[in-house]
Length: 479
Image 1 (cartoon, rainbow, N blue to C red):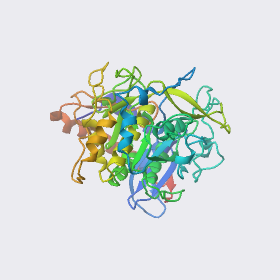
Image 2 (image 1 turned 180 degrees about the vertical axis):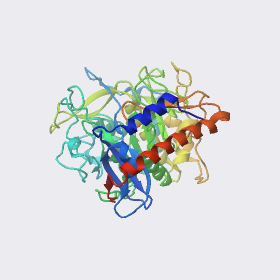
Image 3 (image 1 turned 60 degrees about the vertical axis):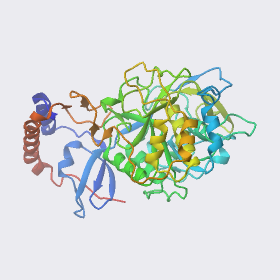
Image 4 (image 1 turned 120 degrees about the vertical axis):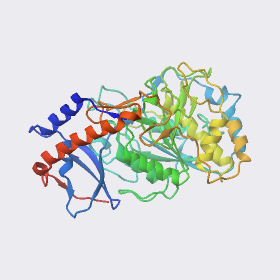
């Protein structure tokens, strides 16, 4: 049921009625013919928006900014990768003996830097950052996914060095094994497709969604079609917002192509069952929490019943660049901690399952990972469905028969969580993406009355302001 307080309604009406200087925000405009426009407009003008050619608008939504999930660096460096050498009896390393087919994994992140332990497994990628003020490479979308550094210079926060986050995730998944140098990746049968979406100020939802679509072989504006479609897409990023419809469409497209979209749950030590954290609150993603070497839920990890699986996240040693701000010519190694790292291990685990049996669907691969999971010591009630045991999963996968009718049991439904309590609250975030007021889902018997009140209030707004705003602002759709 929708419950909108009188104060919230009056507040919205008051804001809409003010004749003050415009406050602009970025929006995604989707037309019914499938074309998309990204524009910066005053939210009060949305009701009057039309296209120059009469093309009908399907929906308009804020182009929310998402950011890489924060990580922590550790010094001095550790010389061992406990997630490979001291986790469930060498589970990741033993699983490699079942790998046979090369699997493409897209890392949708900050881009990639040259590294001797990665270069031979990296395929052609792309840069999707359309905002030239955030791209830091002098242009918009192009075929170069190189990471110029996401160091903070005060523009978007306090000063900090570059994270080389995308390079770190890529190393976790597929750093070259057995070459007598550096580290070993969690899978030995992967190729990395870097998709740059995160700059120093994070990344726009539209760019991230387009990168997902491109990664699995779809066509998007600004870049050539990916000739090496990914079967796994890693998203070690997120923000606090509802699931964008544009993002959901991209995820649905990836799933329809048989790909698995792996998403880190986040590092706020909060329950994602609140449905406030995106893209973990989108339907069809594979949500990942973090655990320690003792199989305990990590203190920073987000948790909840919708978290599908957990993986090592603490003090994870992997590839980075040697530069402090700008990339240097030398590769290096560093430890980081976070669900970002955990997502990297799950992307590798899914790739190992596909490599052991390339006939499996994405839905089957997710189910195999979960049903073979090990026990997790939760700090919070229902923190996850288990800890990944990839060796058990690949053994199971080998004999699995392809079943296109099988559907993985995802607890998240479109626009909500089907197992939520009767008083689950979904609020607009101060970081963007919300509506004024708070929407509560409670018992259904009073829902119709409340929805009627909301409808009448919005109708009143439309009647009183549509005439004033009509033709005030027009946009032209572009592919």
